[in-house]
Image (cartoon, rainbow, N blue to C red; front, top):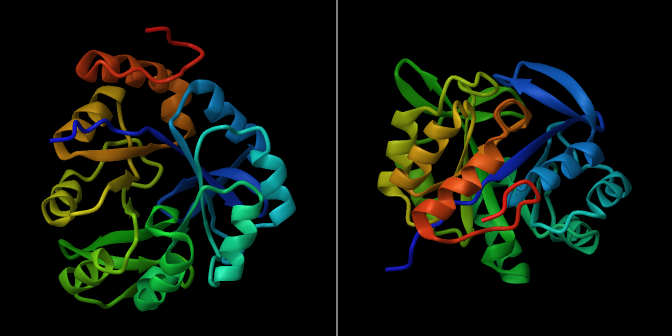
Length: 254
């Protein structure tokens, strides 16, 4: 069996052209330019960067191109991708894969158009979940409403849509730093046959590592955890100890 080695993904939320800190999808605090945030993550040694534009449309392509010009690790972009032409524009400026949210939720069958054109490795599905009356519901971040769908059937269709991986975002945990929603992690882990990325609530570095290895998920972390705890350095160190696999990091020498 192939050894599982978690990837550490740095997430950049973009609103009105600026990198920002999101809190439960309700409050947004500007942090600076997308370019500086991307370069910051690169220097700290994350394995990948996820750029999510939450304005409801495709990001300014020139802004994105400038922001990732010097980034030499995989970049995933999500936000306003609705056509194969949109994906082609992103690919042309250096994006390695796309994340589909609104389309994945409301038009799941259309994912196949992207898969047929670019391959599964290029396509991720990003699903926002919120807890209501002790049940998980799909949350549409674009319209700020709950989508009434049977989760089991929805994820079954999603697993068979051709996507290469699934990003799960907890709305309730977003920006809190209080730890991942463990019940949500367990539920997704139990039923998924695809690589899972978990986002929302990343707490301490130890918690992130423990959950990543136990449930075979790839943690997505934001500015706060990386900046406060130097967690990318610690994360790479611990991965090396557990797997004997080292990844490049300017602050850590194995």
